Length: 409
Image (cartoon, rainbow, N blue to C red; front, side, top):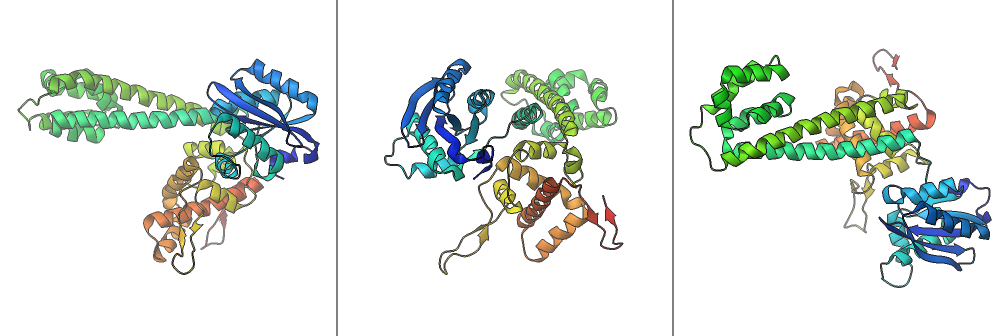
């Protein structure tokens, strides 16, 4: 039995299996008894009182097990309500559900059918279920903040690219200067105040240099000189420049606001990560920073992995073997798994190339004929195995010095 069934002494003690196909505004619930008889088949609103009423009614039939197909976001309220009522809660992964659905007759895709399949799987195939750990406030907040930070990152990149595209359209030489330093707050502030080549020329180099120096004391004067050199390379006014003068300061203001929001989010994420009991364990791994720690906490902690291979498979770092007779052979990178965690571990492995031990492993893989990405994935898999052992044993990272035989901690 999975962990979801370890919470009770005997699986046979469950009398009612409730399958809930969650939705944005309405859910659909199907309840089955041990024999498979339907006790409930109805739509439920996204409302705590109605959910509690259904649970209380079904509780008269004995011990309940509620299983959802999505435990977070739109499924968070049913899970929380069931938890508060003191009944067991499980989770049927979407891929498992779809495969189980193929075993049932019919090709219809309805909420009622999906809810029945979830309930029937809970009744007859308990091994397909996963546990839903009670997410503490710290992890729940981290998960929300990390998701918001991802959104901010995408919006920042899109806004930055839009600014560079407009500058390239109206003044390519100016874009080469400003675009190269657009990641610095000074350039966004400059475009808010002087958004067009005409506005910059009117202000003059001395005033622009003084303004840039407020945000970049060391580089402001040098950047101002480069800007006016670029301004001198173009004398014509491109069509659309006036419109860009309206759009650019808005985009630059948005860019500054997005970056400020990212700083505020990162500050809170850092505080949450450093306060977590696993911080000392995770921070001891080379090239694991605050954002990587946060992703490990939100994507790994609270989930059960029997072996390091299970964690690697979940992370999408375990190679997939393709074999069919003599025509198809070999191992290939997996395209499945948790993409958020895979990206975090991959980027962490890339940053770890500055660590001698990691670099030595990477170089060995390259010497074996692996390409750069293949060697990095291999390194990420090795670090994933190490992460599993550290979380299992609650141990700090230790690195043996091959020359002295000493251990660094």
